Image 1: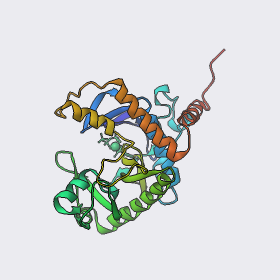
Image 2 (image 1 turned 60 degrees about the vertical axis):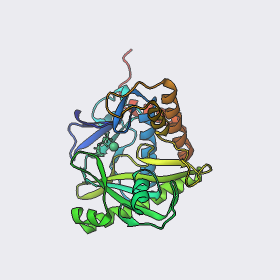
Image 3 (image 1 turned 120 degrees about the vertical axis):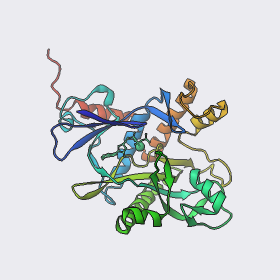
Image 4 (image 1 turned 30 degrees about the horizontal axis):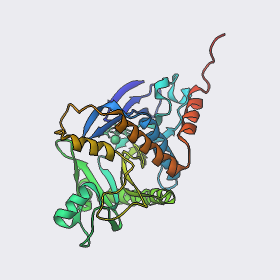
Length: 306
Ligand SMILES: Nc1ncnc2c1ncn2[C@@H]1O[C@H](COP(=O)(O)OP(=O)(O)OP(=O)(O)O)[C@@H](O)[C@H]1O
Ligand SMILES: [Mg+2]
């Protein structure tokens, strides 16, 4: 395999000798905040993200096909023995031509949407009723596209602007699909007493087919909140990086590299929250995911010579 890309979280390899091309996407335990990757790792994070994304891809495959070929990679699917470091945190996917539009769906008001609403009463240009607070539900979930701007930061744009850039037909298809996947995800989360506040999807084309790619409904791509504690106007109880952001804000760090050192308690809290949202929503234990991944990775591999 050939290393083709490393993002803040994933290391991507192209697998040799497959046509059409396949990728091995490996989710590391790296964690970033304010766009800076921390030096320390969050134990198990990459494996939890992978498990959760695969569960949601299976749950939504009747709505839209996705890029997964093997959620639990086998040596045959990878074309070589699997590095033990990759077990449980890697997937074999179709390599897609990515659509450079981040497909955000928002069901509740948070983050940059809350900032825009507070300043202008709109969210990605949609006018919203007055009186909404932080964490308020929106009248209905909204498709809120964003693009990377010239300096590489995400920029929220209106649906009208997205249609100008990408064409109305594609944008409408992405909007319908994103809203349908979001609704399915919200329903699954709600059964576990969790609110899916917002999320981001990425799509791509392979062989002329539109595929749901990247990661789906993970705590890195979504905001998950405890339903019971939800009270508009108050900071929600989150299952994501909030404890890390709070810790960093408390230090008064200037948000420029190098990042400060993180205490192991902060890392352990993050790890526990990621794991708990996975286990509550899917009803699966993290151990059973690891065991299945281990079994797949050693399937068909010649046993030790004795
Ligand atoms: N099936 C696919 N084919 C090709 N590229 C893909 C596919 N699925 C996801 N990608 C791309 O692979 C990369 C995954 O890496 P990662 O999530 O770490 O980085 P990122 O999202 O680009 O950047 P960052 O998370 O650092 O902001 C993304 O650029 C994503 O768009
Ligand atoms: Mg990403």
